[in-house]
Each structure stands twice: as C-alpha cells, then as structure tokens.
Length: 115
Image (cartoon, helix red, strand yellow):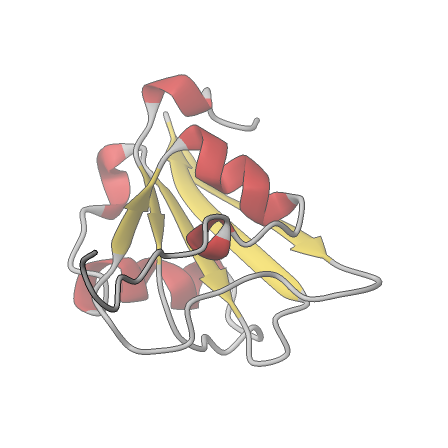
C-alpha cells in the first residue's frame, strides 16, 4: 500500500546507492547513513549510479514496504554529492517521479553592477 503523501515526511538520500539492496539492506541505511527513524512511517528514497532505478522504503503499520520505479528512457534528477539528507515536499517527489529536476526549475539571477 502506497502511503498517503500528505501525511508523511519524504526524505531523499543524495549520492549513489547500491540498487541490489532490498529492504534488509536499505532500512539499516536509513538509520546509519541518513540518521532517521525507519519506523516513523516516512518515505525514504534511494537511487543508483545509472539514475534509472529509484527505490522507496517505508514502514506501513506492521512491516516495511519497498517500491521501485525503473525508467525506460532518461534518468531521474538526483543530487550526486554526498551532502546531507534532504526532506522533500509532495510536489517535489511528484516532479522527481516525472523526471523533472525541481532543483533547476528557476534560473538564478546574478547581478553584476548597480545602475
């Protein structure tokens, strides 16, 4: 059962994750690498090196669920660095699943001089 996104926190793990990992490999990463509580009901997102496979792990009342999406074309927009875990909004998750890079949706304006 997919969680009600309006009721859960959504966390993305930047960088590369070994996509051979299943629930028993990803849940410990939630605790040790992401430093989050896996039983919180939050949705935790992971992506591999090729950025064509995304996995989501979450706790659902009496067990962990693993959901995955594989792209047939294109790549998921994913932060490549090993920066800190980020919390996403429901809208940002929707954009990622649609292949939209929400981090670059607006071009930054840089001012060179006044006048």
